[in-house]
Length: 365
Image (cartoon, rainbow, N blue to C red; front, side, top):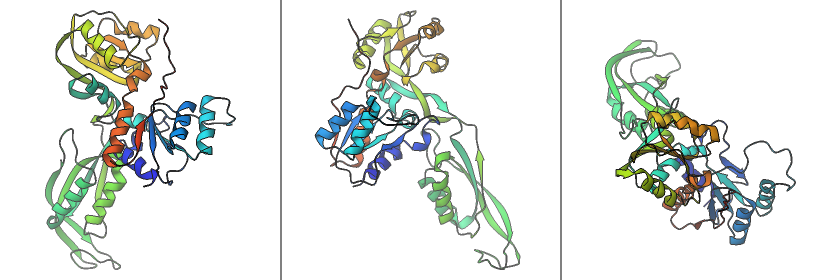
């Protein structure tokens, strides 16, 4: 089995096209064409994690945070990242990262947080725009079933928790086949009218090539007539953060302690407890302070995330309780996500979570 097979399994769940434009998910070091021996999973890639991989004979490191974000002008071993790069190259270790692409998917980082807290009715906090397009294609009536199924199997037709969503309208199409054609119906150089169906469905923009390829392969016409429209609809299950409900109304201080225990926080920073009980919770793994307004707009009682600056705490203004659990603490369960993805696809492949604690923040009590 090649490393690229493992990468494909991850990106089938968390497509690389979903990453933010500033991000650097994907292969960081090494070749995906190498045979996969064993892999170690980590939140961050540090020199100690690479040492851990070397000691265990792992030739693949799967991480959440990319080792390389910006351009490197030199690699001399002066920094932790540079030393990690040098050691990985020397020992032929491939390093792969899935960052914001696994943040935004359904059952991604924030969903895992909600599940760990035992929440129900989980929904995306900030659904993304610009991810959806509409396909309209004109199909001869006796081929509609085959073409519809081909398009759906390629990934189109999903709206929320529904699949195979489409619309069709009967009509009459016309065409005049040229000299160098082999028309499905009619004759060359003769105007022909054909009973057709206009079929419409939605699809994620990043699947466009796959869906159009499936359409053309299934369609009987030499020249397939279709239209693609960008649409402004939000993708309901793709975006940052989630909201969820507690099983029952819970005393605020009890739930804050539940957060602290679940995320193993040595320190939990929060704003004033302005209400005695809570039931709706918003959360976003990693640095989520810029999504405070979305959390307030969702009518959540608590917003769990990390990396709030001092003055940003004032913005809660007794409209919501901010619970800052820490960056590492909020994303630590991402390692479990990777483990589940890889082992579900390759049950006999050697996968483990690193024992190295990569949290750079320490606390003195």
